[in-house]
Image 1 (cartoon, rainbow, N blue to C red):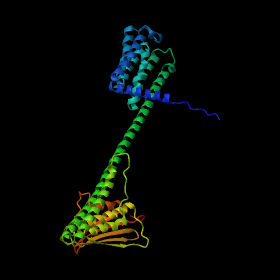
Image 2: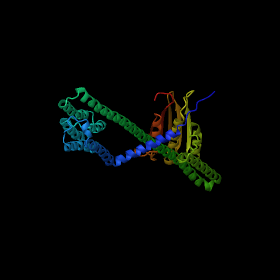
Image 3: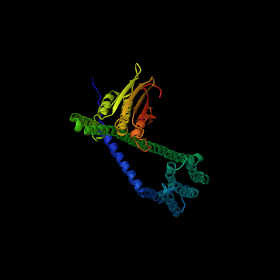
Image 4: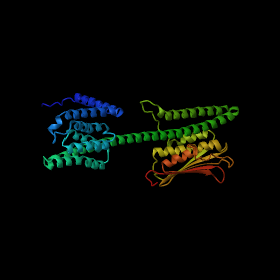
Length: 417
């Protein structure tokens, strides 16, 4: 079977790009130096008008006896205003229309009168549509005057074709203006989309920084509290029970390594390379035993109670991380503020539509816990932010009998929030 090969278009594409670059450079030069093009166009048409005024105008004149000086003056009046066609197109058209009126009234019928189409085009291109009504009010009187004074032709042969020609020029200006405005709208839309994307990137970066700061606070705060408790216990046990002191040192090493691993994993997302950072699994409810074991080694007696439905609804990984971090932060505050003889209890109670998490301790009333501050992003305020992400509600405060409680209510997956 014979197949027809498609001819390559590389050459045509390259030529098109070259032409486009040339046009862009021309537009840029015209924007920076508009007088160059204005002067060139004006001088070109002025030269053509003067050539016609040297004698060629008599071929179309109705009265060839018009003085040469007047013809020269009218030719200049119909061409020189082109220099201001872009800055003041209505003024240029008014001046040219006056010259055209004299030209048709005297019977010279100079062809330079058709140069009125140039400022008319710029009026359609840059001015409101109502300006075209004024433009045609200026253009029409010379045509009518010539047709009335020199009725060698019928009305439709002198006035109507000229008006149709001017109307087509105005329509061309409107079309070019519409395409230009459409292109400008597309460019503006692209710029707005780019700005919106930049804003989204900045917001995402800010949210990521907040998340990393919150995770670092939880990791560092908790592990340093555990290490401090182990170090204090090891110091007291060193003189009486060297074996217990060695166990405390081993626990400090384990906790430190775990903290370093967590920080290394967390900060890995900040690496600015082409490879995606390796992310280990985030803590979840299955890791609570490991968390409580570390807290117990630090010297805080803590118990865990789980009240579950026969088949409790599962929590999303993000919600499990929230529960884990809230418990971690609450126990860290207990280690810091509840005193050496305090005990803590962690309760997980599953209801049909929500999970209730309570962390209480038996610290003395004279031992204050931290209170949330409206301008802090970590600590208790950070726990509230985590809960809010999953439509949860977190409350905390002192107990009437002494101690402190932290309570989190979190809707289960699939339940109404």
